[in-house]
Image 1 (cartoon, chains in turn yellow, red):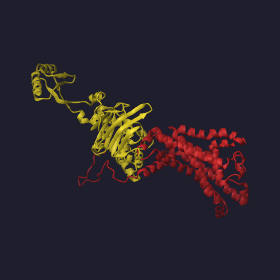
Image 2 (tube, helix red, strand yellow; image 1 turned 90 degrees about the vertical axis):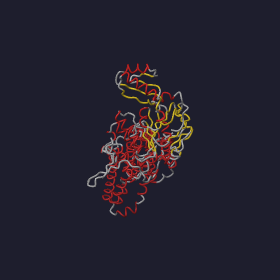
Image 3 (cartoon, chains in turn yellow, brown; image 1 turned 45 degrees about the vertical axis):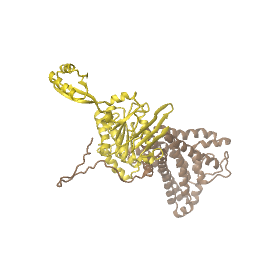
Image 4 (tube, chains in turn purple, orange; image 1 turned 60 degrees about the horizontal axis):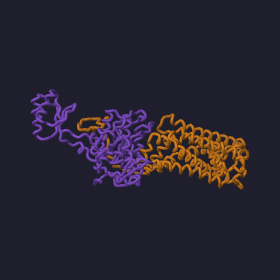
Length: 311
Length: 324
């Protein structure tokens, strides 16, 4: 099942390594936007990305990128960018020289390549450090160079394999911000693999969950994090009196450490909550519809694999 | 991190010295495809081999070898010139003296050591650092990559092989009382030393790239190459003294290259067969004792092309398998 206008499609793709099946009859398409590939280690995320890049052909099925079979037409790779998870930088080279070289390898003339290298390093915040050997860079700086080399030739699509791996929280925020800007400001479609739910939730428009080489779920992040029929209420004091007042009014609820989740969304329920707050003299801190957490989706994916389709 | 991502504008007409940071831009210029990609990998290979754009320490090794080979060329040129002036035409011819052929006889081992130390720079770090994956996801196949790197190192080897020969030629020409007469009589030396240098460079490059392609560490590749050069030589040299076993010299890369050099300069030995004693006569007393029994031309050519094709094919196949 593929979306119309998909930029990349996998049709019944299987990839086997000796005794291991890395991908098992995967049918999937990727359209414009930021798509998160989520899965545990060994779920098949990196294999899927490498097949889309044409690094190796699938054992069965076909992969098409921008309408072309990427293993048969290497030129199409000039429209793709790739940021690998593993180390890939020649540490003795300065970032500016390396990016310029990578731009040329993508077919850009030498003078244009130099300009693009400088612009891209400015985009990722490494302009000042561009003439230093990359061996002197911090982990965060190296991750940014890896992103820069994926963008230097201005691809239509970038595939990022665990772009925030190994970064501290501040570095992770910066990297995810760069990933968001790459699509929102420049219109470059991003496919972004991660095993961290929070990264995908914060960054992506769509999500595909892989499990054991199969697509467990695929769809828009907003759909999965839609509002539930539950209100979450937090009070600043008189919590026990508030809970008693709710119980007295026959409100169905689940009490957690942070607050209380109240079943239902109708106006009558809101009136009951208001009355309970007044009776208990409990100052209201927050009352909002609770959204589903992607974690629930991920943990529930194994038992529900019927939702495969376009990402 | 977004040190300059917000574009500044010159909204104030009185503002001076405004820096326009237009940041990341979409690219709409030309894309020159695989031709540009191959050229970029080729140029990068030459830079890596000779240390251009790197520290002085990185440059030291290749340029020390270039310097050594040029010094050998200069010494041979001076000796040739001095002999010519001191002994005259007839005397110098009788004595022989340093020649273009002799230069390769002396320098083959040095060229091989140079290749063993420098060629791994072109392939090993890309595999060790993981940079190879970045090449292979660009409009470039593994064959393009390997061929571009091979061509880059061949260019360097040709430079290293031919440059000292040019010095020897200049020395011999200038050492002659009538340089134009010397050139007129010996101009065929030029295509011969070019051809012989190319023949040596092509095989040494291929074998060096083969060993470099198998190892991820430069040191391992260098050791493998030197072992490939020395061990067969040590085993085959005593065996080849037995006339019936002279053919084992085909495993000795040094001998194959040396005999190819001699074949190009002097032609085939009269009635040459595998196992026959050579009737080639040294042109110089400098070479006495340097000349082993020559391989018969047919066997030599077979050995030469096997040394060229087999490592090349294994290297190509090895890199093809990296994308499977």
